[in-house]
Image (cartoon, rainbow, N blue to C red; front, side, top):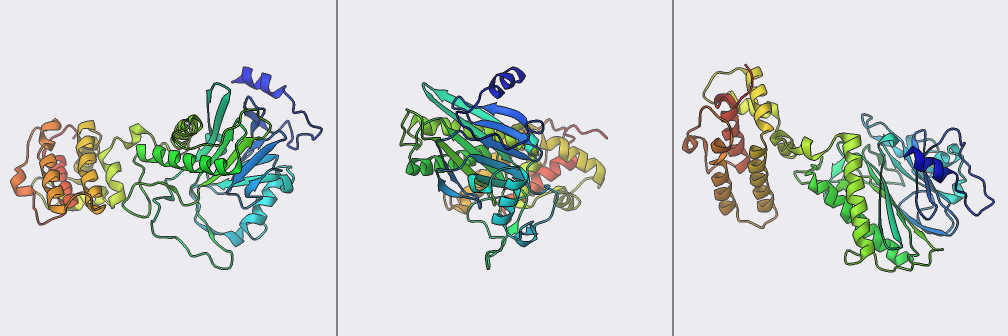
Length: 396
């Protein structure tokens, strides 16, 4: 990386306009083959654009389609632990004014800059590039959804009135650099493809919505900036999934989103291989497990039970069964499976739990399973019994 940085920082644009950021305070991260340069500057990522770039952004500052933008920034506004803030509390009194203030603080001309806002730490940025023949695509992404990850259609957090809205921590921000001449309508298509790819990345991690029992499709504050090179001899007007451009966009965004979530939130395939983690979106936690377990046969030793439950929950085979059962619950809620048939399938899966756990004692499932209770209530009862009585391996 350092060798590439030395090479790339020596390249200059064919322009008389000087760099506005203090060279001693910005850290070079990346340069595309087309000359776009990516820097980290304090709590911001700044992408410097050569002349001849078109931008399509969801920014409050010079958002929409533009052909006069020279800088795109991604700025950390809040820490993830902060509470929600009214937009009027921001410097400038509104999000658009605040975005202009940030540009000025970065030494950028607000008239030629556009910016994204987030609570994510800029040190956790992920940059991924893919190329095919003369085409190069780069995704620059920061992300965190542990606070406000949501699913499209979830209950709203506020009703925007008189231009005011809440600043809620947790955002996936995507800056997509396309090394081709792409018309404005195809840039819209690229934004759609990138958004679908972000959702793919999240769903492959089974990240939960914080506002419903569904799998998240993003955060409630996600932003995107798409940049195309109008000077490129390569003309592309299709960024959909059937096109090579769409394929590369999808690959870049999926990989960069997952890297960013891993670095920011430690959201990884490993962290998700846990029964308790999978149950969180249904409001099921250790306290609920203990409440059920304490009414079952066996000694009531809470500390021992919690250790046993945590140990058991990491068993990959049990995670696999829980994933199957929870997907049945999802499909019933979506109307894809009748509830009676779904419950029958879920019970069948639960009966296999003793076979996949290294248990020293097995339950009498005909006494634990109750068709009058929900699938989740039955699941908790069976697995709580195993953690309490099954001797699955936790230390005393």
